[in-house]
Image (tube, rainbow, N blue to C red; front, side, top):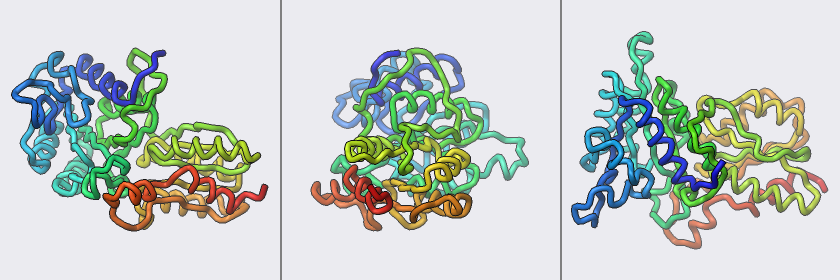
Amino acid sequence: MSQKSFRQAINEALRSEMARDPRVIMMGEDLTGGAGANGVKDAWGGAFGVTRGLLDAFGSERIRDTPISETAFIGAAAGAALTGLRPIAELMFVDFAGVCFDQIANQIAKFRYMFGGRATTPLVIRATYGAGSRSGSQHTQAFYPLFTHIPGLKVVIPSTPYDAKGLLIQAIRDDDPVIFLENKMLYDTIGDVPDGSYTIPFGEARIARDGKDVLIIGIGRLAIVAEEAARQLSSEGISACVVDPRTTSPLDEETLVELAEEIGRVVIVDEANPRCSVAADISALLADKAFHALKAPIKLVTAPHTPVPYSPVLEDAYVPSAAAIAKAVHQIVKR
């Protein structure tokens, strides 16, 4: 087990699967060059340096820069998947899914259903999400509720380097389309990651911390923030269990319901806007299936229902913090 960054874990997963299966290809903007590269190939390795080194290893036939047209290359990736390849398409920012939403929602997600199970679409769409990088409201949104809503898509949101590698390998090997979302604020985080290949099954939540007083469910990066809040609460005598669902479609309903019944108090933390969010969906699930065991109202800690602000002070206030999580816990746990 080695210490590696979230960025390195993603790179290792891509390298491992491209070496294992010649059908795996990649396409996206600036994967092999980039603005200001002065003609130097692999100068960036994508906008966030995630794919650096893969061009030399696998060549320009399998790693392709595309025009700045998400409609074009997501459509091309869909066709490639239908005809036997296993493409990985990179949306630089998940916000750009609005440009190619028809391809994703009306075509890619429905191919298996429309063709009676005779067509598979082994396509992974990687994209960054999340506020905090001063990138403006068009480059920082958390769109995972949109994809979670669409039948036919699997939605993966890792929070640790270990999960990032194992879940991405699983996604590349999956025969269904997978939306794989990477919070850009996590790329430099460090954690234990095995050197070899491994997979993490979809639909299995990660229990990040055991506790008995309150259950905190954190989506994506906010699972890490929830752990920070749990450490603060521990110093106050409050024992918090922290769970990271890892995937929102499929969702590990069994684990979430079981823990809610066992603990009786629940706080759900989600960077997406509150209306029709994953937090709202999980809250409804627990209110339906674990209501008899709840000792207090379910509390949601989310971003406000506004666009992501560009002002650094406002952007920092926009993303749920450990302090905001602790405050919600205090409202339902009597010390």
